[in-house]
Amino acid sequence: MPAGARSGLVPVVVLIHGGYWGAMYTKALMNRLARAVATRGWAAWNVEYRRLGLLGGGGGWPTTLGDVGVAVEHVTRLGGVDPERVITCGHSAGGCLALWVAARGRTTHDLAGGAPEVRPLGALSLAGILDLERGAELGLGGGAVTRFIGGSFEQHPDRYRSSSPAALLPLGTPQVLVHGLSDTVVPPSMSSDYERAARRAGDDVVYAPVQGVDHRGLIDPTSPAWPVVSSHLERLFAT
Image 1 (cartoon, one colour):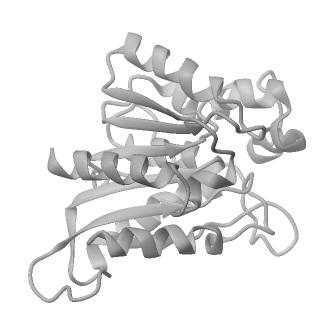
Image 2 (cartoon, rainbow, N blue to C red; image 1 turned 90 degrees about the vertical axis):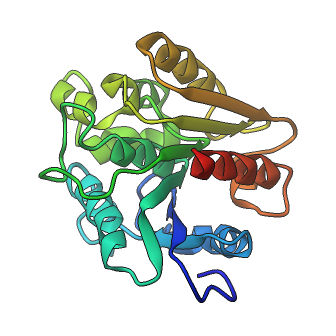
Image 3 (cartoon, rainbow, N blue to C red; image 1 turned 30 degrees about the vertical axis):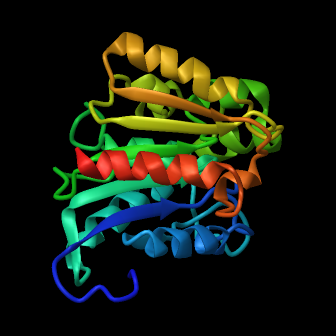
């Protein structure tokens, strides 16, 4: 919670970490970003989910997706926050999850079950893996997408179509795609190509490239990316 928040309900940024859905990467990746969010006067709900691998808790498709859906719904049980002013914000693999969960109830696919109570005002992707089929083809994360889904697109086309933001367009919610142009982990074209497809589908989407920022720089509040991210959060909360 932001310091000094005593009256009224505070807007919430749901932070969803990346790490290719692997067990060794946790929500601690987003701790500094969470503090920066709170400093701006918003609440940060830094969530965890079951992940792949030893001690990951049995994550993967569809468990991880369901966990993120439950985490967003839990906003209604938090004290002092406004469940009607929620924005999801995810990094890397979390960018995929942030857009997917923001579209729950708006798309024809919902792996988290039932009509959601929390409908985010928008979603931010920070170097997100927004096209899972393409991510699998590129072998991102040493085949992480294929491990997450449980196989190739040819083996499980329905899993890809129900989980990938690119396959679910239009999402029906405002989206911002921030990507560092020095990113060598997830190519910036993942965001720029998605932006064009989303616009063609009729979505409200903004692509915000940042010069000189690499993959991890997008979750570093001292990098040039943070003013870009925070300005878009402010804009979305004002809608």
